[in-house]
Amino acid sequence: MSTLIKVCGASRSGTTMLDLMLGNAKDAFSCGEVVAWFRPWRRNHFKLECQCGQIPCSIWEKIAYVPANKFHKNVFTKLNVNFVVDSSKDLCWIIDTQKWAVSKGITTYNILIWKNPINLAYSHWKRGRGLDYWHKEFTSYHDRFFKSNLPFRALNYNELVKDPQKMLAKICNIVGMPYFDGKERFWENHSYHYLFGSGVTSKQVSEKYSRIWDKDDFPPEFEAHIQDLEHRIEQDTQIQQILNKLNKNDIQFHSNYSEQEKKFILQKPYPLWYYGKMAKRMVKRYFPETYSGAI
Image 1: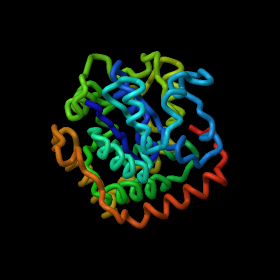
Image 2: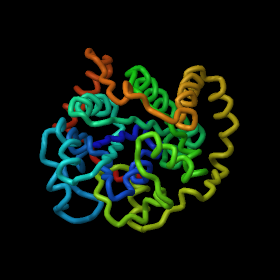
Image 3: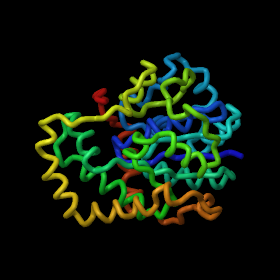
Image 4: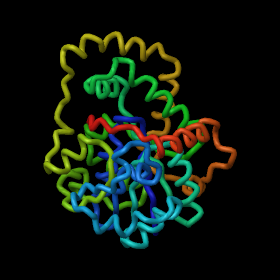
């Protein structure tokens, strides 16, 4: 059976890492953020540069040059795999691929990974962004995702890194993927062929080493703001509503995915933000951003 697993999540939530964990199997293929190839918005997106480092990559030569709505089906056919993992996370792409996959008889799952707000704030802060940068990223993404009514199971990033074997095994059980000891050690896989995604994760793959399960102590400069951040998060009604919905759909409490959920197709008209976002992406195809290379 062909199974598409879409790893969704706000920026800096661990989508690439989860993509590679799930794709760490002989019968699976990790795409990375393939949306950037079909709907480019940065200059580097116009180059088909696979993580394997080969130019051209023999794998992507087989699968890349098809219309977007045929891409996942083409991967299953050309690579003879049972599972395709796509961590594009772009909400328009998630909606579109839901429709395309279901129409072609492909079983689909949406796994929404999220970081605890303090950890997400730190992820952005250490990259030179403001202390409140995370807030809009977190609220906008999840608010739009929930309003799309897409079926999903939520995964807390912090729980994943605390007990990766347990959490990854739960995901595998939901999507019908065999779990094996060491599947979470994605950096040991020598045959990845994914596009774009997290620079930090890419570095771990290339170095064949990871510190993701080491305790991440906050530096004093960030710690000085934690108490105030925690208070504001606790008082923020929108944040609390999002956290409640994520926790209610946590994979630890939902061990299956109904047949109706697997075949869900969002009916048009789509939400207004969808059309606005698609229009902006069309403009950026012709006026792309310059990639800073920041990780």
